[in-house]
Image (cartoon, protein in one colour):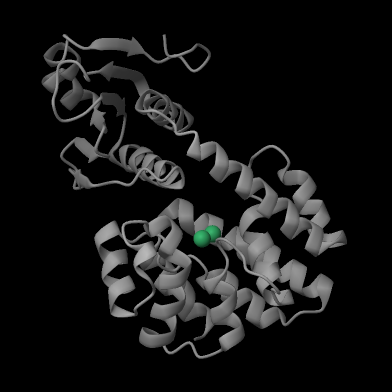
Amino acid sequence: METNRILCLLEQRLKKSRLKHTLGVRDMAVRLAEHWGADRDKAEKAALLHDFTKNLSAAESDELIIRYNLGIKYLGNPALAHSKTAAAVLEHEYGVSDREILNAIDCHTVGKPNMTLLEKIIYVADAAEQGRDYPGVEEIRDTAFSDIDKACINILDRTIKYVLSKGEDMDNKAIAWKTAEVIDSKKGQDIVLIDISRTSGFADYFVITHAPSDRLMKTIADEVEDQLAELGVILKRSEGRNGTGWILMDFGDIIVNVFSKEQRDRYNLEKLWGDGDITYFDGNKGIE
Ligand SMILES: [Fe+2]
Ligand SMILES: [Fe+2]
């Protein structure tokens, strides 16, 4: 596949934030390939295609897992499955036949033993491209150019710690709080959390915000979906992305409502759910 065709496909398939990340991975992968003497063209293609199926729904991901027999352990977990589904779809539906590229895509999420140079490049670039921002990322970015194996180990180490800490389980309160932080980072207005666990049988938390434009509402919704998916909290249902002024996102125990100002005032969920404990989010303070 030619690069221009890949870019066209990515524009159709990926959300803006994911496309930005993908281009960041491409830039870093190309620089790493040039630095370490790997095939620049393959690094560019693998990087551009690595998250090809990242924005599929859980149902779409499951469908591919079954179609290509990728393993039942991936069912219901599109965040973990996306490297596998991307490699399978690209091979079987888009005619990508280069094994090295497909393998680099296939293992970019969790790595594997005895990775090739190209696989390491994609793995590291994915974790440390310019848009990534977490404690220690600068060091990994530098190490990638001095000792790529060490960079891989650092990333793995970080992933293992992260997974273990996830095992300690974020409760719904922490997830609702995290959701509020994500909304805040995308300039959602007057963020409110309502604990409805005692008054409702269907969820634990409502998170409510509004934004001044349709575009910003969608940006907030996309970011919440992405960030919660990283925590393993999967969007079950979403409604209202077609300009109705109310995007409702159902994550099971957490329901996120992104309104226009007008619709927020109109529906006044805070009043409707006034029996629940309301917290007015302030990024500097705790949830209580
Ligand atoms: Fe990925
Ligand atoms: Fe990625």
